[in-house]
Amino acid sequence: MSPDLDLTSPAAAGRGARTGLTRLLAADAWLFRAAAGRRWPGAGPVLPRLSRSANHGVLWFATAAAVAASRTPRARRAAARGLASLGLASLTVNTLGKRSVRRPRPDLGPVPLVRRLGRQPITTSFPSGHAASAAAFATGVALESPGWGAAVAPLAVSVAASRVYTGVHFPSDVLAGAALGAGAAFAVRGLVPARAQLVPPARPRAEVPALAEGEGLVLVANDASGTSDRARALRDVLPKAEVVECAPEDVGDALEEAAGRAVVLGVCGGDGTVNTAAETALRHGLPLAVLPGGTLNHFAYDLGVEDAKDLGRAVRHGHGVRVDVGRFTSGRGQGIFLNTFSLGVYPELVRLRERWTDRIGGWPAGLLAALRVLRADRHPLEAEVQGRCRPMWLLFAGNGTYHRMGLAPGRRLDLADGVLDVRVVHGGRRPALRLLSAALAGPLTRSPAHAAVQVRRLRLAGLEPGTLLAYDGEVTEVEGEVRLEKLPEALTVYRPLPDA
Image (cartoon, rainbow, N blue to C red; front, side):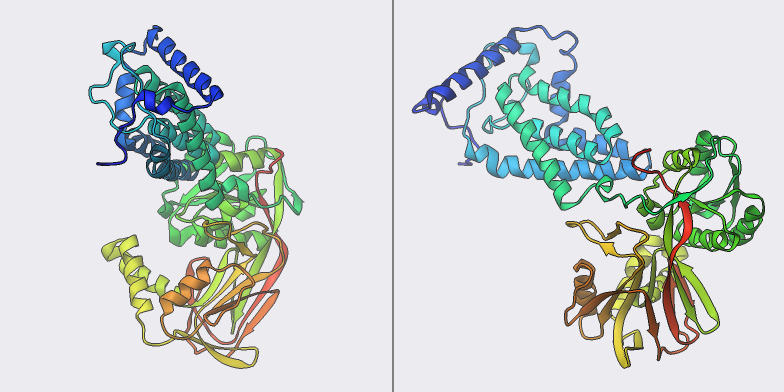
């Protein structure tokens, strides 16, 4: 027989119980009977259906899909966090909770027939799995997005109440399940911190113009990134801002023209477009306003700007900071990077992905490119570092230190720390394992497979001409010796401040 089946009679369950527990159970039973005898206006046609819809998490998967459909990064993260919390809560209830406390289901005698579920549960009563799932999902959503959490909370409370209303749980079962679910959501946050926990320090602050309605802001939007919705949202927030939408090949010229008449230069696009805008802003001595409009948007998200409301608040109040910029030179070529610079596997992967994307799509192209690169029988990179020529799979330099908290991907907590975060994956067999170990390791670590150091400048010699390098997702070729350096606090950008 399954240990989940309720084989315990109420009398047996009460033998040997302490007086305090006996009184608590008696009060719980009294509350259940009181709830059964009470009229719940408007609940009859709603709560039983709601209770059934929450079976197997169906209601919460549908709710997560609806939240994610809003197409904002915060909403997508909230939906994912809610489902992850639900999964942990369900696992805990079904493997530990119901098998540890073998409490029988309530007697359905006091419950009106119209309220009862057509199919009664056969598992033990304590704790309520439905309440745990509801609380876990709602709490998980709220930890990432308080606004969406407030929207979901009434639904979660209704599902929890429906378990008492339909007579399948005592009130204490529901309360215990809700507490367990909320705890699961906080446990997930411990493993994968919410973005609000990783806001970089608001320093060093910069004097930037406060544009109450956006007049003086000229924002160039790369229309290949699907920025039309974001541009419209910005016009709603800053009605006097000028928005120029253009094709990718025209972004550079559009930024130059905008810089000639702008008080503040704005950009909406992916990391590559933002890189071009930053270089233009540096040359013209203008503050930069970044609205995320690409796939990854590392720089904007590390600033704490996720949507037009975030950027609009910073622009209206004149809140800005100074951030570091990375610069590389190779022969007569040079460029800047706001996020990362890399040599080796990654630039080759990007080049292959771009070659195949139009034919088979972005994600399949990326997967195929990764398989192709990792199966190579040669190291893609050899460079002279500190007087020694070394084979490498990858050299990565971050503009600022990338930290890891729990299982979350690395993020920068300080965009003006003055250092390059350099990671090297050494040459050798099994490149996939070497790259994975380096990705999971934190800064300032060393092993036979990889090394990590923090420096202010780096010189790489002995690179073969034509070796690929990538900076902020753009790919070019090495022309000679490569030098990397930091430009401390070189760029002024708008960002919403925590005390705003």
